[in-house]
Image 1 (cartoon, rainbow, N blue to C red):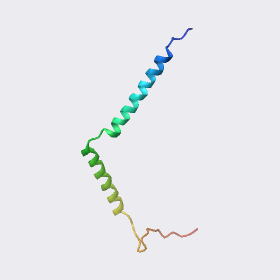
Image 2 (cartoon, rainbow, N blue to C red):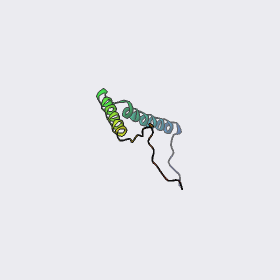
Image 3 (cartoon, helix red, strand yellow):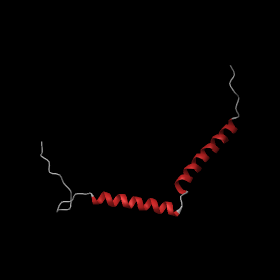
Amino acid sequence: MAGDVINLRQFRKRQARTEKEKQAEQNRLTFGRSKTEKALTKALNEKAAKSLDHGRLEQAGGEASIDRKKP
């Protein structure tokens, strides 16, 4: 009925290494992109924003509004 005996110091160190590796992986995904990949992402975001803006309906007053009957 005795459980496995573990060294708490070693467990804490192993856990800290695991956490550091998770953070390193996240940083590689976030900051590890080349300049061309960043430029491509920026261009795609700008294109999406422009196509969204081109689809807006604008009134003469500048604001888009829909006439609705009040209940």
